[in-house]
Image (cartoon, rainbow, N blue to C red; front, side, top):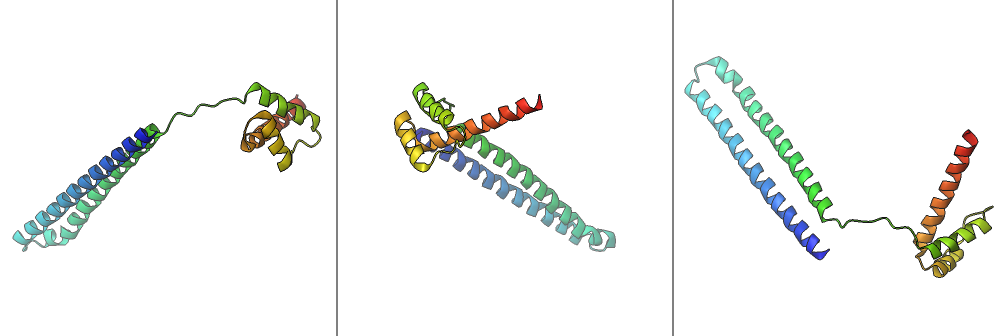
Length: 157
């Protein structure tokens, strides 16, 4: 996992550097375009239509630049999400061992009228079954949900 974190950090740093470089270049090009428009207007200062449209032309340059920055940001965000996903270890769902399942099932069936073990019961069941208290809690929650779902399906028939 440590190698994955290092690779992830390197990928993120590379993406950030690329993003900042692209953004710097885009801002530079936008400023150059705006300067170019202003210089052309100065050359033809006598044309009132051109002077009136100068601000509109410059605003269009900045608007296009903002749209391109937004596209770059979306691309970078997607790349970061892919890097995060690639860095995560694969998690496999596992069932509890058969002994643990038997212990928990016996308790559940014995206490079916009130299938909510106390904290002490959960700790004892965890020790008996060899799993954590959280796993015991989740198992009972899932088991009650399955029982309720089956009862609802049965009543619909």
